[in-house]
Image (cartoon, rainbow over all chains, first blue to last red; front, side, top):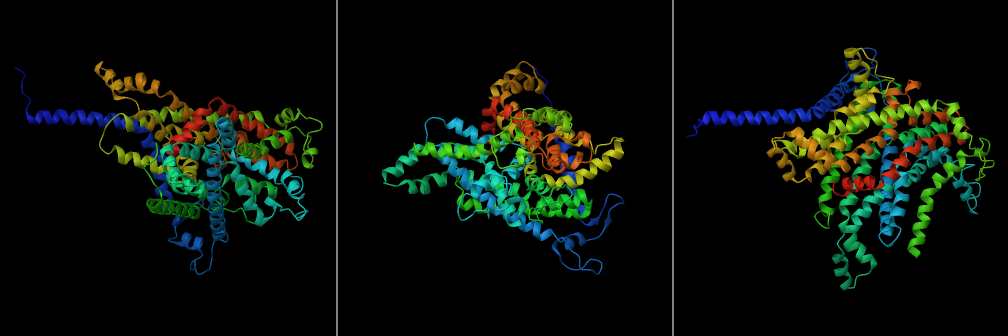
Length: 330
Length: 273
């Protein structure tokens, strides 16, 4: 006869095996847990606390309450004086500019190019390679090339523009002219839409053919096919590219930093020409790693974090109204 | 036909920057400042000169160290984590996995401020090792998991049939055996994708080298050196373009060797994500 184990014994055995399982899970997760605590959660908590202090790394942080946030938004007085970050709102405006033009441009152009790619029977892979490759190029390299291509006097683009009778000699100075510096970055951005093209192409190819056949029987034209079948079916892809574009846009840095360096001819001035390329990330970098105002930079970082979360949340909420999930072969 | 001509025109526009990069790299420094387009004479020597003007070999080695070691780190640390999120059932798994995914949305710049102080102060005082001005702060965190790679590997591990793992368990093998004999051999494409994405990310990375090694010329990576190169040698566009090409060659070579991996990776994270 098999000796019957008492309920208490069985419970103990079960608990022991459960403990062993959690031990294994903990062991496997250990690298991530340590990394999360030391390199993500810990720093986030610390920087939240620092955002209420004055901290220059030379002396220990000392509490200043909401002064950093007042200084940022230009609200109220600090120590009886009216003080504010002179570039904060400009950097916000510049960042909103690059997001509100850059993201739609990226969405529209990558979608249109992907739609062109669904038509031909041959050569699709070659085109896809050509479009995709620039998106892998280092941002530093891309920025340097476009500063060269958009050189006001010797660059090939202005040479072409100057051939147009009305423009002659009046082509924009791009990275050397404040109103044209951000549009120049938008052009640079379009060179890197290859990854989005690939995603749109995959989305377009997964739209079931039956849907097109069904609507064609009803006598729909090309526009109605696009409006009533293609567009709804790829809304998940559109949503994804918008969210990623906005998150990346909030952190816009590399291209602006390099274009600014080259046009000003020195590395000590950021956001050149005339602060037109002073984006949020550039301003944050300047306060943190040029001025070593770690308290204020922490406040800037937390506002950036909160803004990113808020905008993503709003996009997620509105997505229920216009993003159609569950269709297609995805 | 009309469709093809539009596509050819668009591809041509996409190729223009690269063509100009190559042509300019072959010009004399004087000619690179003129509107003329065709190199005359062809200065193949530029590719040698640029190695003499700046320590390009050293920068290439630094970049290679950063990209190579961080890739090893990501692969070694993310495989067990992804395994725990896919092949073992435990309570709270989905909640913790959401936590992993949420860190994907965290802007790099948000953590960079406290992280800089942690490397410069806290860890420096704890260990006595100098981290700022070295590649260590760029490489070490990759040995502690990376959310994107964990996500990609987990998605792939989920597709492995559980019968294969069960057969190992019947033979008395534990998780280590399952990982070594089933999961890793079957996931080579995904592991390859994670490694390549990390390698290219680190190779191209500008922000982290700027923050951590900016002050030390000996530890600079190519992206950092190139951004300074323009400032120092303002008029030498030919050498800048030659250096930029050298910088891009590994990316292009890897891309052509493993094109499918990249395109499938981008599609997987974009369409299904």
